[in-house]
Length: 128
Image (tube, rainbow, N blue to C red; front, side, top):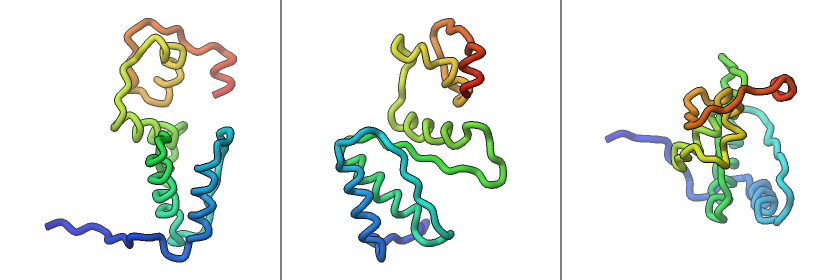
């Protein structure tokens, strides 16, 4: 029998932080960015996992990824986050996604596009 890490049913010692995250998720506000920073081992990942579970229960899409500290890749974190979503929500290329295909292929080389999409323009490459 394989044993994993046992988790408590509740987040211990972070009730205030978790309440704040839940409040931010519950607000009907414009998209925003939140940075959670702190020393290693203080529970950032668990806090974000709990906040992500709350957002999922509300029907929000939740993408997750981890940045490599040893081999950082351009768009690596974004690619991992997109793959986390696509594993459970496969997307078939469609006309609606066609304008994004060249950029998606840069982040996800495995992204398939059933049509001939033009490459990225000079301005788009500069933006990336």
